[in-house]
Length: 364
Image (cartoon, rainbow, N blue to C red):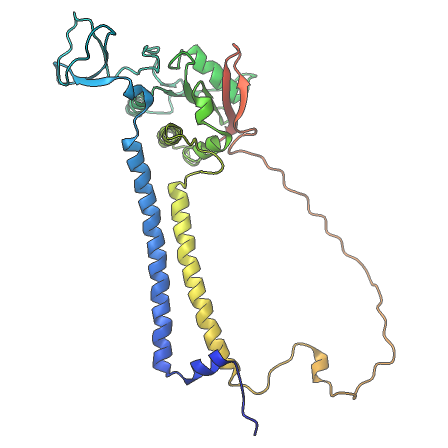
């Protein structure tokens, strides 16, 4: 009888004791799980790095002012007069001195002038509670002060004949928002009647919010708005604007080549990594056991009928192909309703008064 031969790796595996093979497969499974856990830790560490970056970045407006303590224990931004020396750290600010102090609660612009006293969030429909409105205004004031960039938001009942982004830009100008000579800032406006939203940014915002950056920003609030969680959506909007401002301050505005991964994306990536590791482990184990199974058979089933015909036992004298019919199925291409991001994301446009803005409109 002719001795069966096979591939060298298969012969080597067949010679191994069964308990050793079981241990090898178990070790591989453990290694796959460790790889998946390491991926999850890396993703979590990336989140922490983003948070730390948010804490250590100092905006240009903060670098141009000194922090000193005032007599009531609070904190003030101080712009020293050109002819006077800067006050010492911890020196109280006198109301009759030559140094003017502005409380930290009042937003500052990049030219050192205060903006309008209008609240940064307005709700003419009453979608948020008074407590939520106060908390959101506090968060927007904090961002506007820290980065010298007005971050505004608004809820209205309906739009007129203007697009949502143009309505938002006009609303921004009418409320007197903006810091510095270029009135830098951004606004997110919701119109509840037809569930429209418009985003508009001007001044420094035209550099901060690239088309890809605006699409990235949408991911911070559209899921919440879609579930009618408006307070969570506006707080997410504030977080997204801060991430964009941090990236721009570091010299790399968020764009198509450096879009950060959101928390949902990190969870999805970790899930895919774990699934891929387990799938690879399963395929390797399946391949090993299948090779063992194939070596146990001397006769294999054939896929084609002629494999079962004995050679020269059947002679076909004539053959032809007859066309019977053709079946054509037409499937229409679905239209994209574009209810999420709004068409023309990131395009520049002019407000009704001629101001330069960037932004987009969409549905939520």
